[in-house]
Amino acid sequence: MKKYIYCLLLLLSHVVYAQNEEPFIQVLGISQDGGYPHMGCQRKCCAMAWANDSMKRTVVCLALVDPMSKKWWLFEATPDIKEQLHYFETLTHGQYRFLPDGIFVTHAHIGHYTGLMELGREVMSAKDVPVYCLPKMATFLESNGPWSQLVKLNNIMLHPMHADSAIYLTDKISVAAFTVPHRDEYSETAGFKIGTGGKKYLFIPDINKWDKWDRNIVDEVKAIDVALVDATFYEEGELPGRNISEVPHPFVSETMKLFEHEDAATKAKIHFIHFNHTNPLLWDAGKRDEVRKTGFNIAVQGGKL
Image 1 (tube, rainbow, N blue to C red):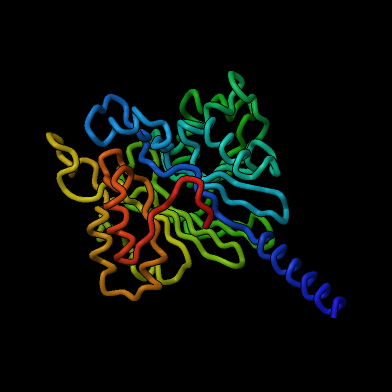
Image 2 (image 1 turned 90 degrees about the vertical axis):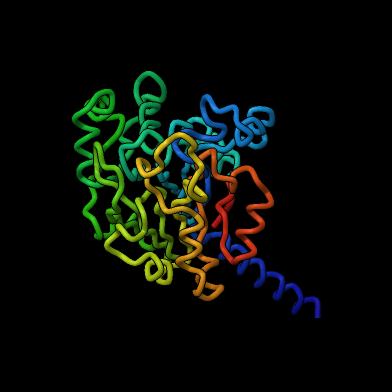
């Protein structure tokens, strides 16, 4: 009997170990480019966070982690990269190298690429950190200072991606970039599909209204397991005195409306992310509960997916 129990415990330990070895996504930041609290904001939304450090949230950022190969990749190089790399090291108990094995960048808005400067000789003086992005983004980085210096000094190594063509990081992990409509002043804007063998992820932190995209977001979500999607604003009226059409994003309320007749399993795939400081999902627990009760999820800084 003792031998049987021992064998059963040994088998269970192998199952748990195998589960722990599966690749996963770690959320390192959830806010819009300006972070939370937001520079210069003394309104109720940010006053709470200025007074309470535990409420502060960094700019949208993900880590893709592969325990088997002990490799990991960063999605977005944010202005908070210093804190986020340290945060990742803390969350994973120092099991991985400090700098990622590659960085994926969606576009040339300040919250998504400016952290690359920390890899330069003034700070990390990194060596050949792979940076994956679409072609216009790559051209922007190699043609404009100070980013061009990172290329010239081999602090980063650009890997232009082809839209809708997957690259393999390991035998199991693939990443495909695709374009989405956004304010493309300096580069195109990418979203990413991530495959880990066990799960499929969709990452769209920035996009104009869903109906401006040449794909159907409902169909896209149905085809994957986890969707981290743009939730910059909750609803109309969050920017008093400013024309919100100048910064078009799908409101959370609009996205929920699009999915209201879908089944619970489909709704649960959606994890809202990239919150502007005015979005109550950042600072209003009641509003978060309300959204979750309708079947949707909200990305949590430090969360594992």
